[in-house]
Image (tube, rainbow, N blue to C red; front, side, top):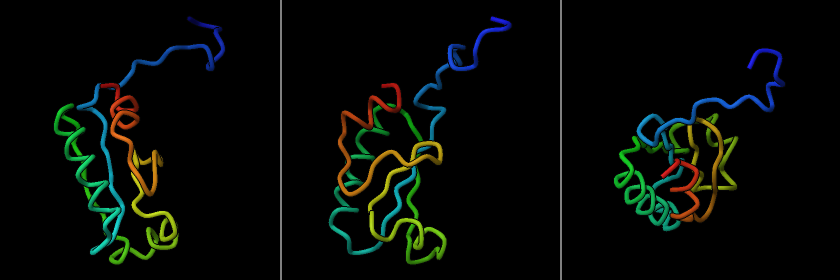
Length: 95
């Protein structure tokens, strides 16, 4: 593949267990609770590790996302906000 454009070169796709999902939200947020339930279900089924971060405890996250919570990141890149679609998340994780 030497000499091939980087845009055309295929890179190995990560397995769901090699990805990380991050839920950014805040306490007492019903949309955050809904998003957490979807993430628990999808990540649990695929074996994908996930974490939850509270914007009220992190000034940088608050500035970046306060109007969009809940926000879902996959490997640090924004995937979704407000409502999390389980099929879209599963597909993005390769499941």
